[in-house]
Length: 290
Ligand SMILES: Cc1cc2nc3c(=O)[nH]c(=O)nc-3n(C[C@H](O)[C@H](O)[C@H](O)COP(=O)(O)OP(=O)(O)OC[C@H]3O[C@@H](n4cnc5c(N)ncnc54)[C@H](O)[C@@H]3O)c2cc1C
Ligand code: FES
Image 1 (tube, rainbow, N blue to C red):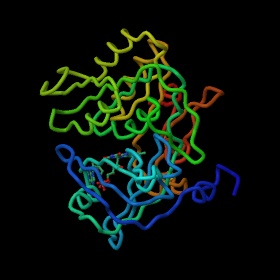
Image 2 (image 1 turned 45 degrees about the vertical axis):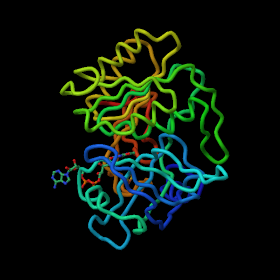
Image 3 (image 1 turned 120 degrees about the horizontal axis):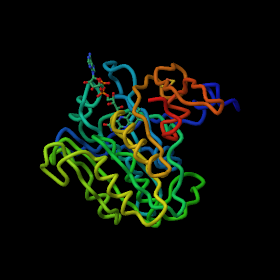
Image 4 (image 1 turned 180 degrees about the horizontal axis):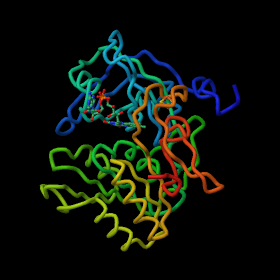
């Protein structure tokens, strides 16, 4: 199948993998990291892509849920053997998953979606709200030249600088900060209640970072939609390129059901619906009709 309008085109690219949980540990309040053994998916995945996950032998919930690739896991020889996913407990699947033990069976299919464009020497400014930091660890590892992803591995020109602006409700929800710090990312934190970092909005941090930036900044953003809209507006005012990764609810993840559509501006100025799962989840922020 060669027609990208047809769902079979995407279904053929994704790998369906019955798997088991290798690790499932708590990182922060209501936030966990699950490690799944799936070498085929890990070999192919690039930063910004996602997988659909489902509890095996369980019909409640029946449908899989999308979770971003947090990072791939390497064996001692440096070969990708698994993926790490970081999830916030919000509903049925994430609640049940948080109680799963090592060795329990899962189903996973992917890698799905388009992913972020690789770094190209720019100042990479990642802006995360809530659980929106999850697609950025792999991106930061690649942009700092410490990891490569994809099969064949994609070409990257390391970023001149990497900054993460990360906003959370309170300090106890911050998850994975040390993963970014270990990669050498300049991490700026904001919290709604002032319990860590700047007491206020993550967009305040972004405004400051863009004002200080000496390189050509490229903003990538993931989080609640009002936050992404505000980030897109700030980036546009500063003439900075901006991509957003949408977290639309999804039922199939492979282009069949149209449950994930979003309004995207077309070249002729009109808008059309596009499927976040296959035409996204990463879109040019200027194209989104918020
Ligand atoms: C590309 C992509 C990547 C993503 N990556 C991540 C990630 O890395 N980590 C992560 O944590 N999340 C991520 N998400 C979001 C995640 O897929 C959703 O939060 C998912 O729905 C969680 O599944 P669940 O079964 O736990 O919750 P669901 O049961 O699907 O509930 C989701 C939301 O709906 C609300 N809800 C559920 N049932 C009802 C009801 N009856 N009435 C009112 N509200 C209700 C819940 O409170 C919750 O806020 C991503 C989404 C996308 C599209
Ligand atoms: S989730 Fe089914 S088309 Fe996108």
